Structures are given as structure tokens and as C-alpha cells.
Image 1 (spheres, rainbow, N blue to C red):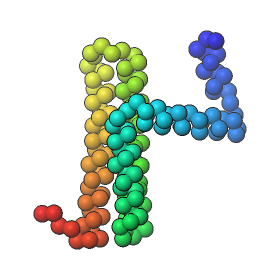
Image 2 (cartoon, rainbow, N blue to C red):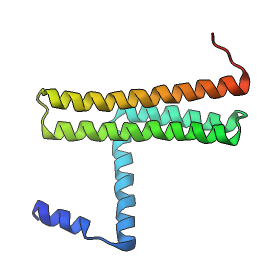
Image 3 (cartoon, one colour):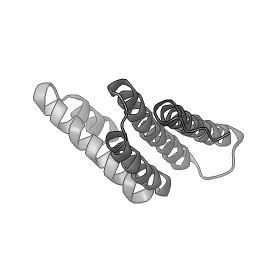
Length: 134
């Protein structure tokens, strides 16, 4: 089957079939990222621990929502970073300035998301428990 016919076959789905297919693609993406990307696995485990702590520690509902958002955001950014790296590597594995910039930008986005996660946790702990690390 040609690439165009395959794409048309996938894009031609409507209604509930499209939603079911999209859920399957999402599951495949999550499983693939977990299986092939150690950074994603590490973030899943880190955020798993943080999500448990969100409910174990005595945070208010707004603080819990913000910390949960930050955890999921770091996972989302890592999935985008993984997608960028896979697309760039599929195009070419040779050294190229644009490929480097794309990969570096994805990495920088993840670093910013992790700084946000750390800052929000620090602020939440400081606010609720008066932890002063300085």
C-alpha cells in the first residue's frame, strides 16, 4: 500500500472509530516512550513518587492541583522532546546545525519544565511547612 493511501485510510476515520484509534495511538506512544527512553522512564518514576506525596502531605486543594499540573507538564514536555529527537534522527543521523538546534531546544524545554516543577515543590513545601533551606 502506498504511503498516501495508508495516510488517507488512517485519516478517513470518523466518529467513535477515530476516538478509539486515537486512544490506541496514545497508548502506543506512551508504551514506546517508556520502553525506549530512559529519561521518560525516570520522569515517570519521579512524578509517580511526587503524585503520591501530593496526597500524603497536607496540601490544600489548589496546591495539589498546581503540583499535579507541573508533574504532568514535565511528562508532556518529555514526550514532545522524544518526538522531536525521533523525527530528527529519522530524517538524518548525520551532524547538522539545524538538527542540533532542534534537539537542544527540546532539551531546554524539558529543563525549564523541571525547574518549574522543582520551584513549585519548593514553594509548596515552604508555604505549608515553613521549610526554609536558606
